[in-house]
Length: 116
Image (cartoon, rainbow, N blue to C red; front, top):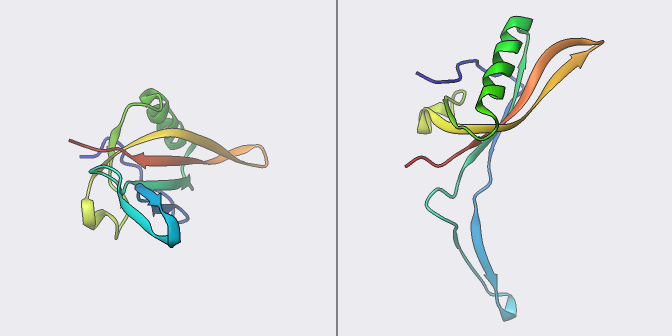
């Protein structure tokens, strides 16, 4: 079971930005290779809205408890969860979303971390 079980809202986004090593030579020639064994980490910009203030506080407390450095398990939304299933991520940044002075959500960035 995932450590983090709150499903993100529909306007969330995910991306992959492969890490590469590149060397350029004369005449336009380039040499490229992947940087490391886990060079295609996922990054998720998640939005959590339409939730009770209790749920939002629970999400905040969970993320705060991880301190930005402790990883936790999370399952990306379909169809991405079918490729790797549960992944380990860390969250170093999240924001409260306000509307008219009321808390209406949280945005959070989950970065995949390598697992042995």
